[in-house]
Length: 82
Image (tube, rainbow, N blue to C red; front, top):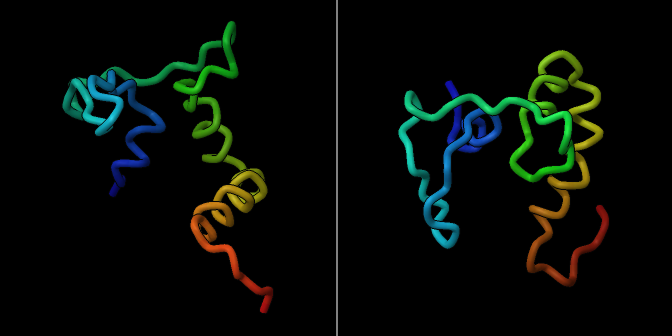
């Protein structure tokens, strides 16, 4: 099973409305993302990470840690360590 967020990492969804994130194609019609070696820092160039994380769970955990912490703490100012 793939979540919508998973699909966004491997498919070029051709976003037609940036405010809502509405894609311009259905899953089967969206082309696969292909890493762009000329522009590895492009925001849409996520396929390189999915290919890495598929074979290296430790790399995923290292990269995910900070992002997950930001996500769960968003909007909270008075958090204390347990």
